[in-house]
Each structure stands twice: as C-alpha cells, then as structure tokens.
Length: 451
Image 1 (cartoon, rainbow, N blue to C red):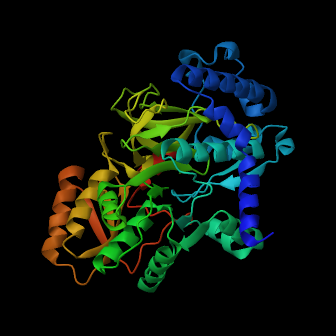
Image 2: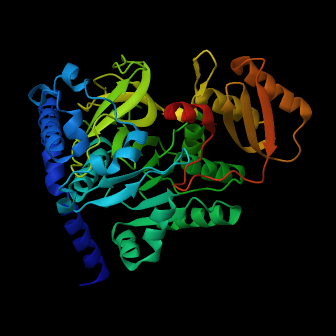
Image 3: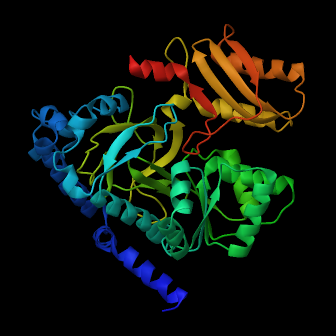
C-alpha cells in the first residue's frame, strides 16, 4: 500500500467514526423535525443528569422533566455559571463518567482563570459530526478531507500536533498544516506565505487577529498569496476592519465560525452573512439581564445546553459571550436558526457607574481608526474601575502629545469627564495561552461576576 492509499484509507476510517452521528443530523429536513430531535435529546439528557449528577439531582427535583421541553418549564432551571462549575465540579460530574471515555479539558482562560471541565467520547463524535455538517452542508466542501492551513495559537494544540508521531501523522492524512500564530515576526510570516503558496490549500482557518495581522503584513509588503476557496475565522470576534483586510488580501470571502472549548461547534456563517447555530447539537438561548429571551435584532447573553456530554452536563451554561439574535429563516435555504452576530465576550464591555454598558466594539473601532495614522502598532484597553482606564500601547515610533490628547478626549466623551486614562508604552502585548488577542478587558465586570 503506497502513501496515497494509506491516506485515503485513514480518511475513510476516521470519517466513519462520526458517520452515524452525521447521518442522523443529515436526515433532518425541516424545523419541525429539528424541534422533535432536540426535544427528545434534551429530555434524555435531563433525565440522565437528574439520576447521575448530585448537583442536578438537587437542582432538578422540582422540575417536571416530562414537560421540560416547554420553554416556560425549561427556563425555571437556574443558569449555570463558571464560578458554579469551579466550586461544584465533582458534584456536576456524572457518577458513570468513567464508562464514557471521559477526559479533562480546560477553557482558554481569557479572563485569567482557566475553567476545567470534563468531556467524553460520545460528545466528541457529535462535535466532529456537527463541524463536518457545517462545512459539508453550509459551505459545500468536505472539511475533513480538504487541504487545510491552520493558523493557530493554542499552545497545547500546537504541541500535540507537532511533538508526537500520532499528531504529525494525523496532520498528514488530514491534509492539514499548522502555522504557529504565536510566531508572527516578519521572517515567520514570509515563511507562512511560502508554505501557503506551495501547499495551495482549499481552506485557511485561523484566529481572527492572526489572520488579520498576517493579511496586513502581506498587504503592507505587497506580497501575493494563494487564494483558497474558503477562509474561516474563529475563536475571536471578527471585526469589520479585520474582515475587509483579510478578504482584500486572500481574495475570497471570510466565513466567521463560533466555537468554544466547552461546547466546540456553536455556529457558522453562511454565504448570506448570518451565523447558523446547531440545535441538533446544542440548545442555544440569547437572554437579557433578567434571563428572558431577547427578540430578533436584540443583543443578549449566550446560554447553552450541550445535548451529548453526559459525563458533565452543561445545562443552561452562560458561556460568557454576547450575541445579537438573528431571524429564524435565512435566504441561504438552511432550516437552522441564526445569530446576526457574536459581539464579543461579556468582559469586552465596559460598565459606567450608573450601570449602563459601553460595548468593546466602540473602543476597538475608535482606536482602530486612529491607528491608521501610523502611531500605534498594537493596543489593549483595560477598565480598572468605573472611572479608570489603562491604555497599553505598542507604539510605532514617537506618539505626538496632541494625538494622545485626541484619543483621551474621545474616550472621555463616552466614559465621562472624570475618567482618568493612563498610558503604558510596552514592547509587545501577549496573547492568552490559547492564542487569543484581547483588545478590551474589564476588570470591573470580572469582579462583579464574583460578588
């Protein structure tokens, strides 16, 4: 058997591992069938949790599980927070977790406190099937077999993919090459461009900020890059200026994909620009501050219930992100409901003393515009208190004092005249250990969550 036969055989065998799950998903033809599928899986999950998890046995004792698929009944279940998971990990975990091939995973820790949780083999199969569904049924490409470049930043993923034989072998047979987004100096990006031009991938997937920085470097240095069929941005909010630059350089549409360590595949963008979420895999709610569902076009907190992680059920889990609810139907033809956009982490938002919120997008857009004047290479804005901001800046040469005054004035028009703004000039702003770049951080929001 030659190397091409080996690769084809491996692809077929690995694809079969989640073929049964994908076939179940692919049989769903309309919203009515989708609702029935979700209701059945939700009821099974909750019955299991009530019997096998000490935490849920107590929490669900007054919930009528035979009517739990009713919205009013389901909404009686309290929202699960990260702090509850940290304090109740053992109690939330099912007593039969060891029989399901369970394993530990952790979130990226964008707030500085990584979250530990448990997943299992059935969860992984359904996650892979959902991911495959997005590429096959919405993007119309076999995302498993297609040639892929992954501009990735997770230290553990990169180590796993490069240090051991099984990881390197999996990369080869899956037609994937990893490029380390932690190494983004000029010589690294020149090498990445050469790799892409020689490999000619069908898909380039990576963190939004990494794709943006790479594209900006190519544009500024007038370097040409092979244009793939798809560019998929993930792990971070895809800002408009990022999308425009990536599409300009890559000469193809950027598709936004929303996922997380806790739930994996949550939503993916279609050709019409809406993010379709996957009710056959996860029940998704978008809630206001009073835990009521928002209306189409309104922003709220994302609360999710994964239907297949029986080892550690995450029921009505507040994942920490904000989104704008989209329409139930889309012109692309998919029956899946939509999000108009994922607007960012809750900690991206800044809070005023009267309780009103200022979205992180405002600061990113404002500083992004003034960045075009050529004085700032990188920035990060931290809200230390209601009236205290810290500007961490990687300067591009000397920054004129008039420019700093202009930025301060614009910040105070939103944060208030009493706001103090401290500028820290640094050599670099590091990404999180999971490779994400945080433009805005609210220490205040984090402290409020703990109270």
